[in-house]
Amino acid sequence: MQTIDYKIPAGEEILACSVDFAEGAKKASIICLHGGGPSSKDSTQYLATALQAKGNTVIRFDFSGQGDSTGELAKSSLKKRLLETKAVLAYFGLADRISVIGTSMGGYIASLLAKEITVENLILFGPAAYTTKAWDVEFGSGFTEIIREENSFLDSDILDLPKHFTGNALYIAGENDEIIPKQVVDLYKRALSYCNYFEAYTIADCPHPIHRWAQKHPAVRSKTEEKVLRIVGQPINRAS
Image 1: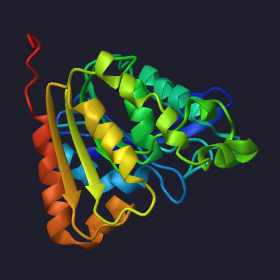
Image 2 (image 1 turned 180 degrees about the vertical axis):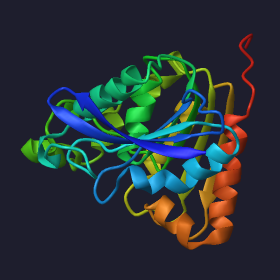
Image 3 (image 1 turned 120 degrees about the vertical axis):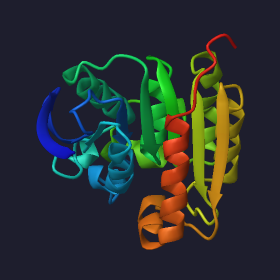
C-alpha cells in the first residue's frame, strides 16, 4: 500500500490531491469531499487507511482555498466545489459507479454529484443543506448572509435526490451537532429513505466535527470505520 500526492488543475486553481493506493495499485473507487472551515483532505485519512487495507483505492483532495490547494476561500462557492470534484474525477478517468464520502459542506456536494453520475455508495457525515439561492454565490460575497436567513435550507434541492440516486447510503450524525439543524437531518433522511439500502448512525455526545471526535475516541473510530467498510461492501439490487 502507498499514498501518492498529485497536483490537479481545476479551472484557474491547482488542487492538492492524495491517492491512497490499495495493494496492487487498483484504480480508485472512492473519493472524499471535506467540509468548510478548518478542514482538509487529511480529515478523512483515518477512513482512507481502513478502506485501503481492505483493497480500496481512495482519492482525497483539498478544495481551492483550503489545505494545500491554491485559491482563496472567499472566492470559492458551492458551484465551484462541484466543478472541482468533477475535475478530480476526470483527471483519474472516473465517471461512474464510485463511492463518495462527504462531510458537512462536502456532504452537500456529494449529494449533488449523485444526481449527475452513478454513485454506488453515498456516505455522509453531518451533511449541510443550502438554499438554491446560494448556489453560485462566492463565500466572501454574500453567501453567509444568504444561508443565515431563517429556515433558508428549506429551499434546498436535497429532496430531488430520490429521482437520481438508487445506491446505498450511510448517514452519520453527531448527537450534539451544533451546526446542522434537526430539520436538515430530517431532509436527508427523507431523501435517502428511497435508495437501495439506507442506514443512519448517530454518535453519542459527538459535536459537528465528527472526524476529529472519532479520532480522539477509539471506540467511535472503530465503529465508524466498521460502518463505512460495511456500506462500501453492501450489494446493490439493480432490479429494484
